[in-house]
Image (cartoon, rainbow, N blue to C red; front, side, top):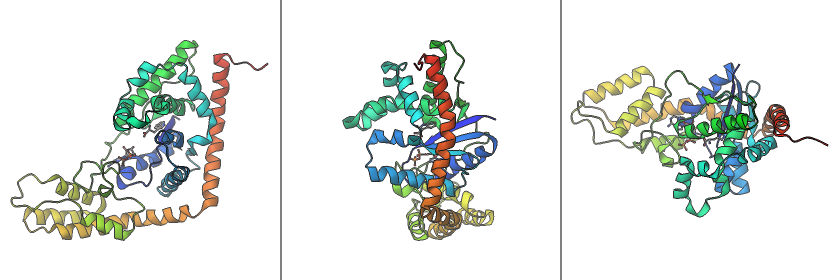
Length: 331
Ligand code: ADP
Ligand code: TRP
């Protein structure tokens, strides 16, 4: 059984793109692998959240992951900062991570550009912390999107370097988890190719949105002036509406609007009304679970402490062995 590790940044509510792009595959993954899924709250300190925001965002992600079907009995679900072993491994890895290679990292260069007033050392060493997260469990696989490939490559560099420096074959070389079927990409309501809360809040529908909010957002979705000639290329906004419909509406409904587009009689307002109701049907059970879980502090505490206990068992073993390899010896 492969050991899989993935970290989720606590950036607030999950949207439909997060659900179809990441969560659904995590739920499947937990059946066939030994999965460690954690909420990366140490990493989020690089942007200086307030104490209230930090805890609130961690809770939101924990609740929404559970609501979507991550099972704390099957996967090990934990909060990064509950694992001090990760911080220790991060310190040790930093001794063999070179400032030059960290400075060349694309995500660091991007941060220098976007937050020049806060280029902290945590940002520079973000990749060593991420490597520590992964190799603390001696993971084989990491589900990562394109934007994280370079970080995973650096993890391999640090793991191999450790093996070489100490002449051991201790850390496996983690590779990207192969999702098999093509990953879906949920488009945005604003005519963008990818639903994303970082680009535009209104492009996203969150799992926890109320039906009223969903109706409002969908009715405001970007379209065009209509099919003057159905053979002309459709605007991206309209392509997106049809694409969303293919996920949330029945094949009959989709066909109905395809036909009316082809005949030039389509009314985007009607299409949006229908789409909103179909999305609401999909999100309602999830939203109910989210509300129930958010109110159940006792259960959340149990999940977090059970996850921390399981994760710490694995991490403590690694740290014990790493200390021995490096040459720390008790007197
Ligand atoms: P955002 O762009 O809204 O900030 P994140 O970058 O936090 O989203 O995404 C977290 C996870 O969700 C990643 O694994 C990413 O690939 C997936 N994801 C995000 N948006 C989409 C989308 N529109 N379609 C499919 N997957 C997505
Ligand atoms: N850097 C990842 C992101 O931005 C989050 C993350 C932190 C992570 N540690 C990890 C992902 C370990 C996979 C494995 O999405």
